Length: 370
Image (cartoon, rainbow, N blue to C red; front, side, top):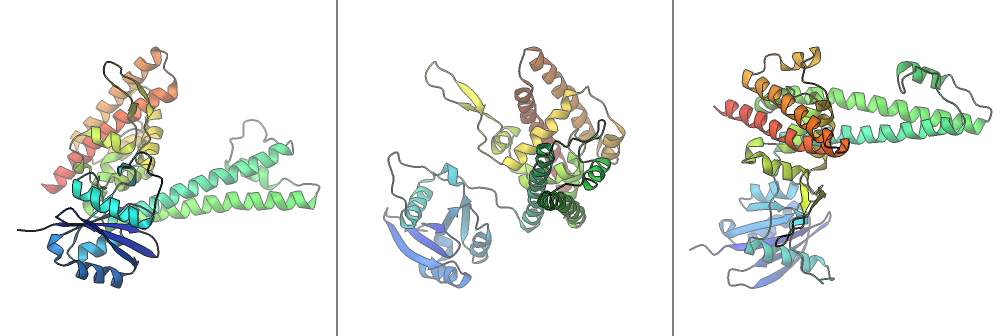
């Protein structure tokens, strides 16, 4: 009979604190080891048969390198969600040793929630997509600095000139200032804006190349998601890379919870109280869903751009996308007619939008597996 030993690892960049929960109930601290492949291999060897080991550690900045190393050694390992680890009220002492022992103890009792670990292809694409998202945020900051600098100088673009268009940038470049210090500031802010634009363009080209080299099932899902209104290529790649396998969600509801677009609730007895969305989930997925949901304010239609994206897609996928347009638009109208604020209405639409994305993803994954 196997005597399973549960191991908790508190992982840092340079060290790993380890503790083991024995089958007889004892929880022992094993010590702190360097965060190197050789030290981890020696720890696993010291703990005995890999068939009797169950190892866990918290998801964090160290990524999944340790996970893949342990799996390669034949150890069953799980990466757990830090926010879902039980915490005792009044516990104000936190050390690496205590964290490792708590992980081992909670893992043995089944109180931990494992997260999805992406494979190499998904993780590489996700890193690239997140790099572009970071570049977009940097571009927004750079534009704000430049526009507020011009506003402080009383400089406003001529009427009927769209901000950050080609004409606008030409106007900004032609500006001249009286003081050399202001001229230097202008050139620096302008250079940052142009650098951000070049950086985003470079990353988007890399995303196009990465999608072309991605596995066929992933490319099929990315193409299928673009059948939805408001989900163009970058958004589809973001959804596919953040979710991974749609089939790991049995129904759309867990996916909605995974994104954090579900209401908070504090109910007891006959009292039911719901509040704003939890935001306890994948912020990247939530952002894309909310941005896409704004397009469903408009009446259902299939424009030339959307028609090109839907070309060569399976009829059942196009049917799901068309059904989504009608349902989400009608829901927007009903909620808006009741006096709901637009951001709240769009958030409700984003939650349902994830259900349609799940339906498309599962449909394509099943067809690819057949």
